[in-house]
Length: 422
Image 1 (cartoon, one colour):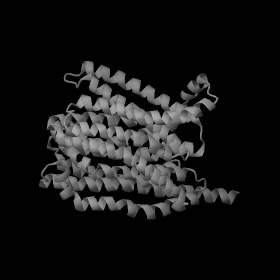
Image 2: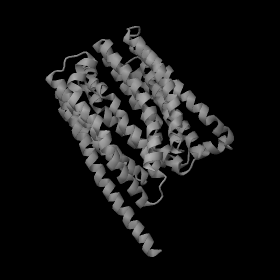
Image 3: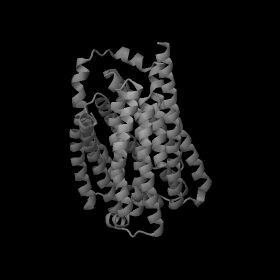
Image 4: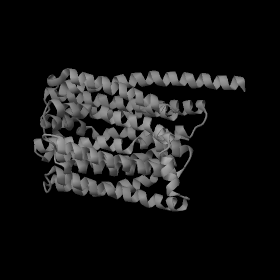
């Protein structure tokens, strides 16, 4: 099964996510090389906002739809997810409009709107393809990402040859080009929507049932704090330092951006397969087998980057590698590997129906790391930020392992009790 179905779906998901991440990486690399430091710092800040708005607007749609569509392919769950995303988008737009009126020195409201709109398009796109992945339809996303990546490469060429050097213009093009994959997804699900006996009034009433929001809240809570945990160094560097320093710290992440797709690729396929297993021992056997086979293989790119980054950094970013940037870059790649390990246990907690544990873990770690950044305050620099970032992710991994073991013991004891009484 692993050699055929799992591997085939893993390959489809790898190609789709690789096209998406690859085109974004090339765009960020081109911007890092060719924009002025202050302009790249501004772009990094607004792009960070888009990455924060994305999971907020998606409201936990990724794992939620994969997990539920794998068990019950009900198109109503997708419709409610799309509706929730639109509602959250409207609320965020209203909130930032009020903020732009009250803030003493805000960014132009147009930049907030652009980042919100990009987050919305990404969220809608994720909802559609998460539903299709839960329904075991992985190949469709490859077509959509191929179209999106091809168009994004055109934008990369414009930036590379310095035809575009303005943050707002770049963000506007990112928004327009992100609509292409969404269009492909909409074309695929349109026949299913037409075949379904949809009653708008019933869908609207079902949307406001308490169970709908309770089911989604733990997923959304985790995703928001998970992306917050990922972006914490950028947030606090923007608060306590300068946009230039923020841009410089981001360059270490741009260098390793391609490997960040690895947890995304395998986690979606693994969750889809685990959620389809009804028996605990079947879940355990599949999880152990995939962990032992895939973790060493997926760890190889991180090991190669640890060895090659002293050469890659000056070559790709056109900057000299100083002792500080050397240490920051090493800590970043270690942290990204910890993220890979962490994802295995996040998938397990979701597949066993404990997404609230996953959310509680990432919330606790995010709050602890925030306190560490606040304690450093004005002394915060790129090196100390990288150390806190690494230790916080290591803590998250250790906590998750403890939670997974505890949950497994509970499920095992419950199964023994059920079989004894039966």
